[in-house]
View 1 (tube, one colour):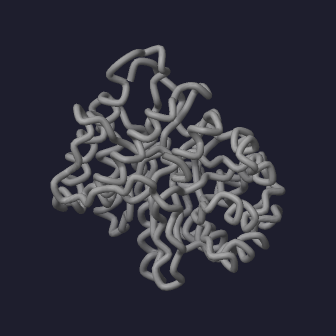
View 2 (cartoon, one colour):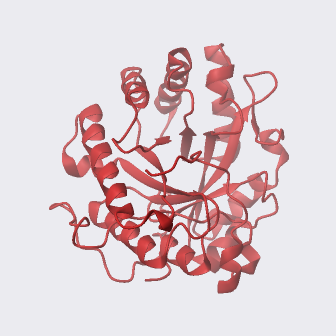
Length: 336
């Protein structure tokens, strides 16, 4: 990428959607990044099905298989504590939400929402039930740029596992995401993986690890973290790639560079998990990170979305600065 950005920056209220009649969901960070479209770099993998010209909203979650798909909206609970999730679903058609960010509290072993609130001290626990009644689903996000994730702060393995179990159970979360910023801290990596493996032995739990995407794909430390995590018995459903989008001023080639980075990551994911090409794409998710509202044009957004759909990537999301209203619609699938 031409310029460095801090990936995973907590999003502000999605004011851009207000212009589309979505004022009631202002504050919902709904930006996801799809990929691919022009012939020079968007040729889909041979196994992938052709994407439709007008993608439909995310499919309704199934109680039997609550696997995120389509567009997954990140909700910063510290910034949008009053957001009505069910109303957001009805107004946007977006059905999948990730609530964050859960960081280590003062004691290290008790996760708190960014901003210091205990997990039960936000209204979201009650609103998740309303979202599910409306046909949606919500998971939880641990970690990110706002402090230390519990695995890095809590050296007590039993306490860490119990802490994860408690907060996941409080929200009935069928999927969780760890935005990992400590991949070089192998003790933390192993504690997190051991806890995840223990929770997955107790019941179904889909787990995503989120890491930055670089020009050459994943960084060596992140690749080693994935290997260590798998070796501990944890099952990772997806590797979510935080992709910093170059500004339009960077000129031609921006989307080709994104595609090249994704293809490099695809080869790495296939090797780490020992899966074939199609399965590797299904294990990857894509989250665009915008530093400015004009980083993506509507055409750029469509290229990204179509690439992800044709490749068969698991899901899409976005974080950072809200895009324009038109681009937002394209990203979450409500426009061409």
